[in-house]
Length: 341
Length: 269
Image (cartoon, rainbow over all chains, first blue to last red; front, side, top):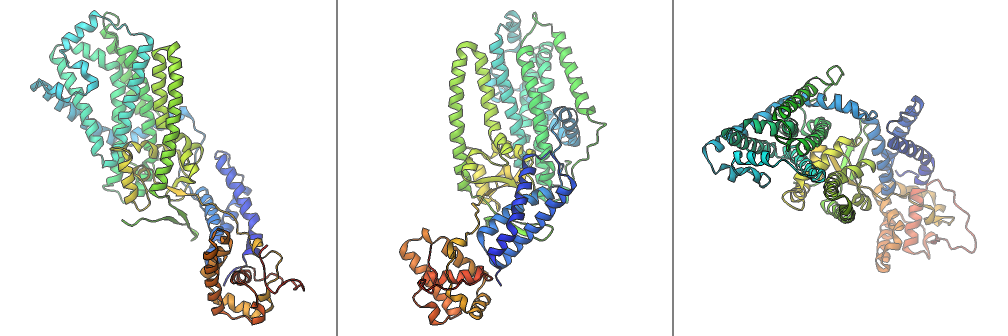
């Protein structure tokens, strides 16, 4: 049996055009809700068009019309059956003080794991620095070449010759730091797709660098300088990279799926918004860390007293801990299913 | 692993619809267009920064570095966000990123699929991503897999213009409604669609191929139902097929009265 295509098109065309109009409105203004009558009409048009598609599929096998109807039904289906969180008007304030810390806490076990891996790297780097004098040369990357010399010599040089860089040079340095650190964090997230192996390598290697430099400076009796130099930016930078690693481990956890009954696709779907939130939060923290590292950390005594730098760093750390652990506690945030590591 | 060329979705109402998946080659071409655009923008940015450096020194360099970073990371995110799953390259090649389950594409999906390019680009020239595309059943690179997205082709759709086939023409077969009914009963939907498509695309065929195709189709239809000689006399194979399609797709159309000057068959406008 073959339908009268001409009559079918003539009768149904107005409904398809109307559905297209409503879809256009919905797609261009997702935050402008339909009134009840329009919702009912939209649903009716979707069902009518879907029924038309069934007819075309069954009787006429007319490819052009079928493709057109498939496209229309696909768009309407996406709008009607979307059950994930409807996009509210984006509020940067709510996102920063509610969504980001809530998301961080939802996956806090992955964060502890990232810390554990980094600490393992710190221990390895520390032992290497303590027992092997060549470890620094072998393990430190090119960008840390200024730390290859004796720490005491560097401290004496920095204190003798205070930072005379211009604001423009500091801006350039700051931009390089931001870009480099954000890229490392993005890689830590993205390499979660290697079942977390790449993320673990990045976190462990970061720990090695930290361990090498720390033990080197502490061994040379320059602990105060080290703390004053690292704390102002490090208390933000290091947790930010750890949160990048946390995101990578969450991704790896979803891929592995231990102890979860959801299918791979459902597990990944559940964590996607959280990954985006975490990495955007990381970028924000690293912009701050880049500014502090370039414009504050590089100044030493006698320009800036070490005590003041250490206190500044500690205050930042307390504020960061308070921000991540307390912010958005009172606001409801139901976690998506299967989203926890 | 066998690759699907379409994304088939089934709605809770039981309606099945499909969307054509874009292959690795089409996606690579779209990416090349985006790269070309990116390089052009980079050249422009470099020129602007060189001029700015004369007045702002290293501050201009810092600005240049930040803009390069934001542009390289944000290009895909920005365009896929505002154009609902399309970059310039994808738009030109009629491709679109959609949710793998047919739902609305979320901003978080766009962010993740673009950030995971870092892995897909490893070790160089999208080797990992390209390999993943080839091996994946849904032609997904790793970023698509993580973000639960697929890239589809947007078909060019237009209504079949049946009027151009038989507009105002006399169809000699309509004088035999019992044979027309038998024809509709015997022919499958696929055969009908084949004949319709042959007519719609006739002008794109080589003359010899056109003759051969319509000869073959007309021969097949003659085997199904034989119309009297007076109805078929003097009409070409293509006209024969056109009459059949008219009967199949417009069964309720009134039969226009034959005029003395008009032959007993339809002719193309």
